[in-house]
Image 1 (cartoon, rainbow, N blue to C red):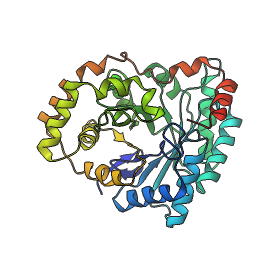
Image 2: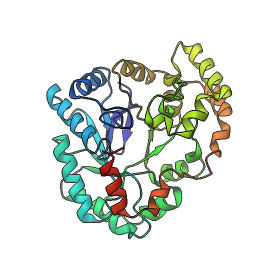
Image 3: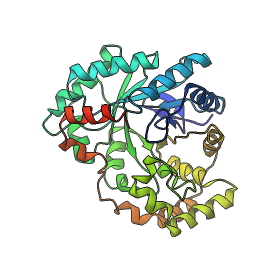
Length: 328
C-alpha cells in the first residue's frame, strides 16, 4: 500500500469519499452496497474513509459504521467525518460529534468543520468548540474544510491547545484556484490538503452526460466535461500508461501533494482508484496537464470561493433547509 502522512496518521495515498453513500444528490445506497464498496476498498489497500453528518442526514455515517461492523474492521482504518457549518456554538458542535460517534459506532479519527460558520457567529468561539472535541474524547484530531485563505489565516489564530491537521477543499484539474493562496498557506502551516471532487463529479473520468442531481447542478461538471483541450491531454497521458482518465486525474493530485478522496456508487471503481496509487507521472506529464488546465487557475476566481455564500445564511435556516431535504 502506498501511503502518506495525514498529520500524524499514516493513510493510503488515495482515500474514499462517501458522499455518494446515502446521499439524495446521488441516489441512496443500502447496507449491502456499502459493505461491498468498503470491503473492496480495504482489500485493495485503501484505508482512509471520509464522510459527513449532512450526507443523507447521517445516513452515510451510519452505513459506513454498520459496514465496518459487519466486516469486523477495527482500528486498522482511518475514519474522518465533518460537522456542518450551521453548528456554530460549542454546545451544538459537541452534540453533532456525539451523534456522529454513535452512527459510526466508534470515535472518528478526524472531525472537520465542513464549512465556515455564518458571519454573525464569533469565529473563535466556534472553532474552540471544535478544539474541545479532542479533550472530550469525541475525536483524535481536528481539521477545517472549505475555508478561503483569509478566513483560514484568521482561524488558525483561534486554536490554543490543539492545532488542525488538515484542510479539505475542492481541488482538481478543472478547479485550481487553491494554488493561488490556499496551497502555499497550507504548506506553511503544515496542513494536509484533502481534495474532494478530485475527478470533478466524473467530468475528469470520462463522464459526458449529467445523470445525477449533483452533476446537473454543477457548472464545473458541464464545462470540464466538454473542455476538448483538457480532455485531450488527459487521454494522451492515459494512453501512454494504459491507464484511465480518473487514474491520471488522481495521480496528478498526488503529484501536487494532495490526498484525493474520489467517491463511487459502484465497487468496480475501487480497483481503478487503488491502481492510481501506483501511477507515477513524469515531469513532462504534469507540465502537459498543467498547461491544458491553466485557465482553471483563475477561471473560478483567484481565491477559494466554494460554499462561502453559506456564511450569509443564519444557522437555523441552514439547518432547517438541509434537514427538510434529507441532507445533501
